[in-house]
Amino acid sequence: NTEGMPIEAVYDGVHDGGILGEGITGSVRLITHKKTGIQLAVKRLDLVRVADDRHLDRLLDEIKIMCALDHPNIVCLEEVYEGDSELYLTQELCKGGDLFDRLDEQPDYHYSEAECARLVKQISSAVAYLHSKGVIHRDLKLENFLFQDERNDS
Image 1 (cartoon, rainbow, N blue to C red):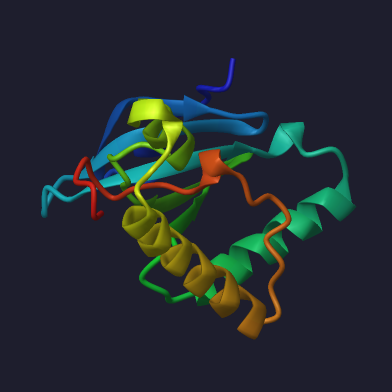
Image 2 (cartoon, helix red, strand yellow; image 1 turned 180 degrees about the vertical axis):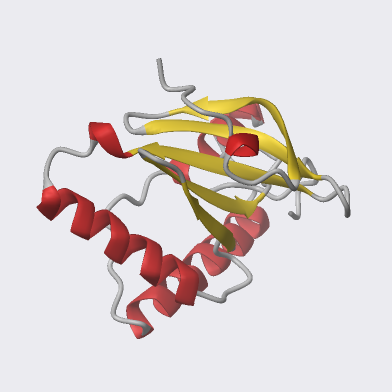
């Protein structure tokens, strides 16, 4: 079970929503900020599942890097909260699905040349930005490219 303690137990400024996805170290849920109504995604990382101190240090380094990134094609890490045995990473909400699913929905499983060029330009821009900051992603795959919303140009 990757649900764990809800973020409301750590930060009462949000309403906890449904699960958006699950991973090895935790779940991603929808949250809504109580005062502003802004929806975000919160990734709950179960620190009990982190193998050892070396892996924990690597995870904390990744979070520090994410906090320093500012690029229009990279999901923004908004805030980090710490519970007794978990971390909560609040990020901008991307409601448009991932590139794998979008490609699967296309006729004959491909985009037009113009659409491909637009996507490759955005992906290349994000990767070049990461490299300019000395960051290597190490997990570039279609499932990790998210769209802000359902629009084709998001």
